[in-house]
Length: 233
Ligand SMILES: NC(=O)c1ccc[n+]([C@@H]2O[C@H](COP(=O)([O-])OP(=O)(O)OC[C@H]3O[C@@H](n4cnc5c(N)ncnc54)[C@H](OP(=O)(O)O)[C@@H]3O)[C@@H](O)[C@H]2O)c1
Image 1 (tube, rainbow, N blue to C red):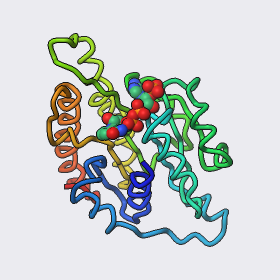
Image 2: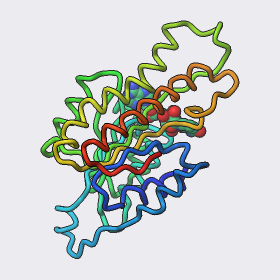
Image 3: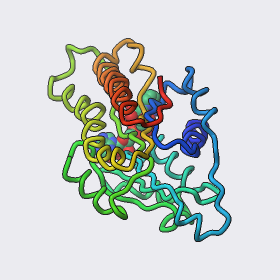
Image 4: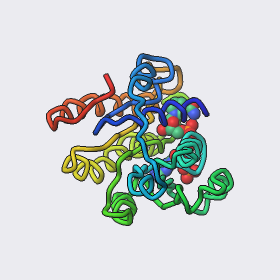
């Protein structure tokens, strides 16, 4: 988990103006290489300059796992280059994050409510940020589903697609316009190895992550048309 965070942190430190990066397969593929070549730390001398230059990072699904770990790791950046908005659908589950965040809480890390299945909650969260601006979006929220397809209901399957795929789409519908206008931004999507290879009894989960991969690949072409820098392939 820690080295996932290190990879993403390195990626986020790049000076490029925009990137779309499908990050989980990164761990075992060429994408790790792409992360590594983008390291270019900003040079902030004084704290107030660092604060002014802080990149706004919004992460979804921070109540546990990768999202929590990433939020804490990025908020602990020793040069304080990032202001992290660690979001979760149910803020009653924030205790683990609060504990892990320690002194960064209220400094470089703030917790906000955001449910990727609820467009209003996404918009309310983004609107609550200073100038609604996000420099780095980390789409991490996701749910798993394991078992033979005959044992799963269509409603359960729709719920997986709604979170893993449409959750990303909803986020981007809200966040992309501002990034496009500013011609600046990073988008990191936590996908899965199952977005490029199916695995037994993960049929619906894999389908949701394949959808994510296809969506991002297509969107990457559009991003190029906006003269935006890309890091994924
Ligand atoms: N761990 C792995 O081995 C692995 C491998 C490949 C890919 N991934 C991907 O990595 C991402 C994070 O997974 P994880 O392993 O860290 O699992 P996790 O610990 O279960 O974390 C998933 C997070 O997503 C949140 N979430 C679920 N539905 C949401 C919604 N509608 N709106 C906002 N947040 C929601 C969960 O919140 P609640 O606490 O409220 O449920 C939780 O915070 C997922 O996209 C997953 O598919 C993980």
